[in-house]
Figure 1 (tube, rainbow, N blue to C red):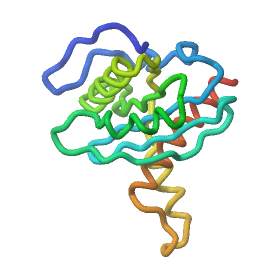
Figure 2: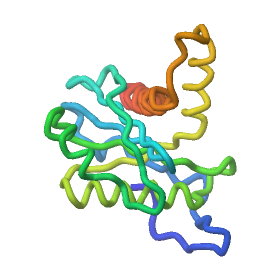
Figure 3: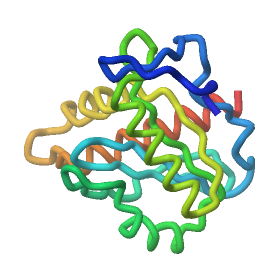
Figure 4: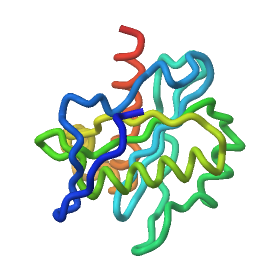
Length: 169
């Protein structure tokens, strides 16, 4: 999923080329709910699809503590409640399309989730998803603006909806 092994560079980026697809939509089941994880350094936005994989909706925001692993224990109750059949991970590629340290951290989180749950994982280029969610939030009157947690959930929803739409096309 997303190219073969990559050589690590001194700047933390990898040698994956922009042309390497970060995901293969066919790796995930085509029926049943999909969970989207938008991993960040402080917060992790989550979204879930409907069982027909047509529409995504915000689910939750998990807090990530500095220097700690992905908070799988906080994710488990949501996995049990929603029973996803696969996981979409937002892959924060650099503007050049290469994978840097943030993308490597997202892959570590995806490997952990897949390894501990047995769920298949697909990686999706999530460049600009948070920016799109923030722009949408900026169009809301100031007193009704969403919190940073809500923006992270919205970003995960944007990532998942784009994945679902692209998969159906």
